[in-house]
Structures are given as C-alpha cells and as structure tokens.
Image (tube, rainbow, N blue to C red; front, side, top):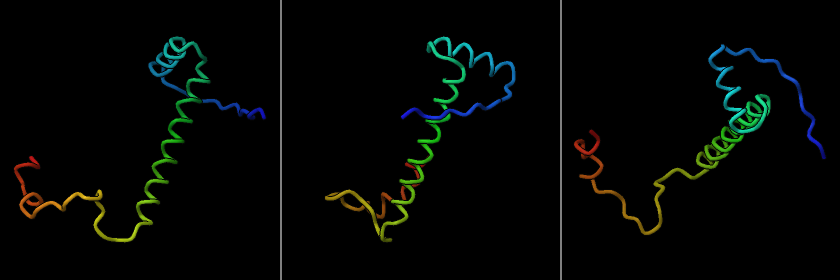
Length: 84
C-alpha cells in the first residue's frame, strides 16, 4: 500500500538551507526526502526512548543489577576521587 505524503512548507536560514541542499546532493536524494528521513529517525528515536522509559518505570521498585554481579561496596559508592 502506498504511503500518502503531505506537503509541508518550511523556512530555513541560508546556511541551513545550503547545508541541506549539499547534503541531499551528496546522498543523491532531494532535500524533501532528506528532511523527511531526518524527521522520521527523530520520531522513531523518541518513540523508542518513551517505550524504554515506560518499561523501566513499570518495574517493581528495588535494586536492579545484572545476575551474578555483586553490589558495589560502601567504599566504591562513596569514592569521591573516582567521580572527579
């Protein structure tokens, strides 16, 4: 099934428009397809982040760690020099 496309008008400063034209040419595509791809990638990334956040928040409260991995010692937790 063909995806329906929607025309959108955007306004860019000259430097950004120039970059978009050059980048589209480098990728052998149109500015429209280039920007559409960038926006789709951003949309997917945001959706993945939200899904991961929801999965994390749905967990039972408590300590989350890998199996067979010991908890850090008190000294490791309070090692200020390591944080600098």
